[in-house]
Amino acid sequence: MSKIRVAVIFGGASSEHDVSLVSATNVIKNIPKDKYEVVCIGITKKGRWLYYPGDVDNISSGEWEKDPDCASAVISPDPLHKGIITIESGTASIKKIDVVFPVLHGKNGEDGTIQGLLDMSKIPYVGCGLLSSAACMDKSHTHSILDYNNIRTAKWKMLGLRNLNHLDKECALIADDLGFPLFVKPANCGSSIGINKAYDMETLKEAVKIAFSHDNKVIIEEFIEGKELEVAVFGYDSPFASFVGEIDTSSDFYDYDSKYITNSTNLHIPARISDEASKEIRDTAIRAYKAMGCKGLSRVDFFLKNDGTVILNEINTMPGFTPISMYPKLMEDLGMSYGYLIDKLIEQAIDNADRNY
Image 1 (cartoon, one colour):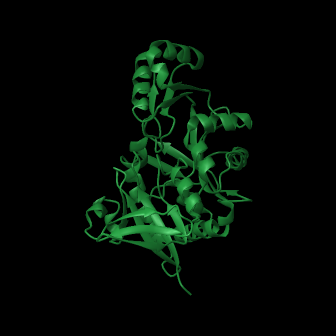
Image 2 (spheres, one colour):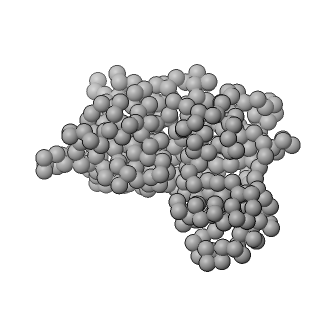
Image 3 (cartoon, one colour):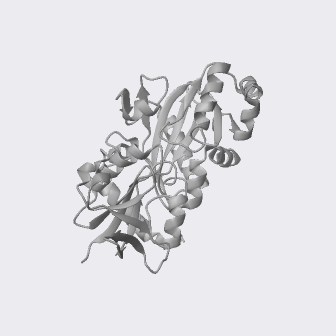
């Protein structure tokens, strides 16, 4: 029996490029090699697509790009090809692909862009579809859909580029409505990139300018004091939620450095919360997953306020797969080893392929 050929796509012209490289390295190393043949496709920070046949250990460092055997590559949108076109020594050829695992974070990876391309190509892929990926990536749309479905989120406001002409006035109105401190976020970034906490008008205006350097829409949310919690969700028609995990960080909030650099965070699985709170959070995670049209997998993040109120923070449609990432750790707590989890993610993508297009 021939092996299933899975293309793992990593990197990307995104501020989360480096995180993707680490996630992809772990995914590739843990894919069951007796069942799958891996085809590596890397995207540089400048957006160039390359077929990479080299050592997986060179991916996380970024050294993969320098491999002389790299060749230009692109997913063919023609469903008759159902594969990747590579150009080697001036000659184009098609590498047939059975399924794609897009281990991409952020812009062009989690926002529905590559999902739309794969839909056109009729190649099955791991994770959420175009619409749910786009809606979960854009925090303003996430807020709007969850608010409509009576799922509690933080109070929020949105600014567009046109608001920069009246920034003092806009910030004053928002501060008056939501109060300090505030969290300022680019609408379309992940891994806490571009997020800052504002304590007064000056830090608010500065945080807004930083957020606008990452996106053309900015979300400003009220500060929620409480535990930071995460839930892994898996599945299609009947998704299930993991037990709740807790983020315990010494930083002011769970920012990029806390997640990937300083190692200043402790993870508690299960979270140190009551059974009642755990049930409400897990049930809410499933409700949100369905409301946003998610499929395959997502990580749903929450706050649990000191008074017991559950606040949904955001939904991550392609959560990290780094050695310290919460999603695989939560699934491992349920008895799903790294390799088994990846196998099942790919398997369900193939089994449900007809629903993708």
